[in-house]
Length: 124
Length: 112
Image (cartoon, rainbow over all chains, first blue to last red; front, side, top):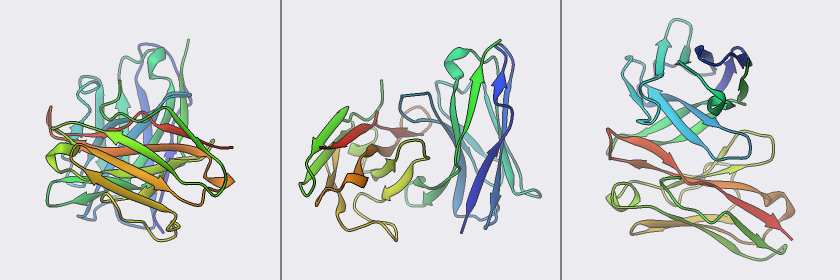
């Protein structure tokens, strides 16, 4: 059974960089049939896709966040990470990491496993 | 403003059938990208409910079903139960702007 677990600071100051790591267990992050993704959810609001990475390191980001987001992967540790720069209060949310099962015929896919989520608050 | 449009809320009595709609556009659902559905119980992470428009992962009751037509999709829940009270999200892929995974705004299901 694949499990994902987010970790990182729960409080970040405005203008600083939010950094989170997702540790994957029960399966290899190097498997060629999955992307690895970050999604966030502000309190009481809906889900927002942040970006995804493949084990090769190729990435794709939400255009609305692209200028501030970096997602990286460490296959030796079976982890992938999120960095979001220049944060403001609007970035306060529960951040989820998730696995995307790739639909090869169109490169899309769905989120089949999710972490439990971690609350990140942006405040001075 | 979500790329996919869902009603904010639906409700139904135990045993009844409810449907939740998800409307997209020509760059996502209308481009033949699959629609997937997630259930989010209070205080928990979303859980995959339907994938590939109408397929249920192992363990999901057959009371849940999905369909897609044109630029829209629907989630149907029959034999409504109290434990179905949750938020439901549709998700697809959008080919505009280098490609993105997109969600609906979510629908709160209340079991009366």
